[in-house]
Structures are given as C-alpha cells and as structure tokens.
Image (spheres, rainbow, N blue to C red):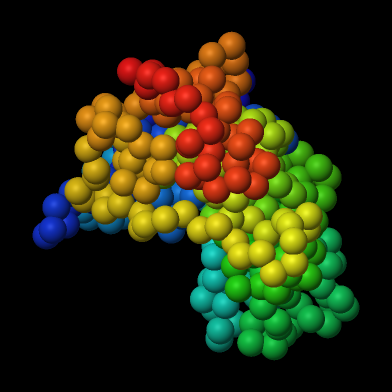
Length: 354
C-alpha cells in the first residue's frame, strides 16, 4: 500500500477577481522509501498541493478543498486540526523554501530543534532532546555540532541554515518528507551538497520524499518518479528514466530543453519556453498549454485533454492530444537539438488524438 495517495485533489481560492484554481484535480502516489519529484513553473500548483497535504491551506478562509489525501490509509482531509498538529513535524515534515524566514531569529538553533522534539514527545527531557539535536546537526554535516547548537540563525550561512531545516524536519524520524525548493538561492556547490544529503538520509532512514522544484536537473539527482504540473494539473507522470529519455508532453520537452547541457557547444543559448504561465482564474479553453505550444492544432483550443496512460504503457501518463507516434517523432527531432519549427516541418502531424 502506498504511504501517500492523493486523488483528484482540488484547491480553489475565492478572491475578488474570481476563483483561483490553484490545484485542479491532481493525483499521485508515493511509496515508502521512494521519492517523487513535482516539477513546474511558478504558479503551477506545486507548493499549494503539498501545503494541503500538510493541512496548512485549511486555515485560509477562502479555500475550497476537495478530493482525498490518504496518508498511511488515513484521510487527511477528514482529520481534525488536533490530529493534523500531531502528524505535522512528527509523521509528515516539510522543508520550506527560505530557511532564514523559517527559523526564528531570536532563538538559538538548539532551542528550536529541542522545541520540535518536545512538541510531539513531552516525555523526552530537555537534556535528551538537546543530545538528539546535536546528533541531528552532526548527521546533516554541521561542523562542531556541540558548539554550533547554541548559535543563532544569522550566524549560519544559507547552506548551513538549510541543513538546520533538514535536521529539524527529520528530527522525529518522519515517514514522509516534503522538500519545497530546498536548494533555492544556494550556489551550485552547496546545492549539490544538500541534494546529496537528502538522498543519503532517504536511504538511511527509509523516508519517503516529495521534492518540489522548477528544475528538472534537481529532481534528476534525488527522485524515482516525476509529476510535471502545469496550470494546477499534472500533465505528465512517469518514472525518472522515462521522463528524461522518452517524454511525451510538449511542456516537458520545453523544460528539458531549458536545462544547460555539458555536450552543447560553448556559447549556445538556452531555449526558453515561449509565453507566460496562464492565469489560474481564467484558464485557457481546451489544452491549457496550447497558447505556448509550438505544435498546437485547432482542436487543441477546444478539447481539454485528460491524463491517460501512454499507448502500451501502464506506468506513464500524459495529457496531450497529439497522436502517440507524432509525439515520439517530434521528441526525437527536439532531442537531437532541432528547433521546434524544423521538428514540426519534418514530422507529419497527422490527426490529433481526440
């Protein structure tokens, strides 16, 4: 049985301008000890879906939440606020984007770690909790943890603060760790260290991980499966190898082509995705990606594709109206470095799968 099972999750916010469909029918599963990467641009619904798993969006007075979130067989959407407080930080933990704003500037690092333990385990003494805090700081690679445990957050670098947040998230041995852009604003060397640390701790502690990021290069390091989100929905879902070798959605193609490659000629420019993410209040008709898709056809402006298995595959889902053979041929040209215009000219577009 999956540890986390999200089914048809919808999170809509009522605003003066209209209803923001931040998450609009998202489904995914995460097994014990496995890692899922949720990828997409800003505003695609990645963070809102995970904040809902943590039970944090329920405090927004304008949120309308439906669907189901089963954690270890328990429906989190039906759980009481008290039950969610017991789960948060204990069975389910989260690393937030900005470690500086997530740590209280007035309290020492050790005090905040001790509080994270004793909030869930009142029978643990302060001395035992402090020892556990020092142990976790050492586990995440903080040098001289017995001395640094008494430091304040501003005395740590960005990478060190992020390590503290990882220590805080893992201090109660959670079954599920949600990492929301854990390498944001970190330089490449520190980013690699943080990703290595998360991967190592996952294997050592058998923790399930949900990694949220806009960078496919990040999920390539840590995850087993990838869900690509666009405009509040999952548009492609498969294991990591499939996403990188045989992606099926034009949006995924755009994300992959925007990653710097070592085998590209020096000075070659990155290929951005044209246009801007759509409004989540006035979602485009038909396929939400059609205003930015270089392979759009007239039917795509009318028909909203469903997330369905790729022909002949049970472990690869995609929401695209292009015919399977057309998608395969287009990706072969794009993967070879051709521009979308040349790929489209070279591939018989045939009929859309309607």
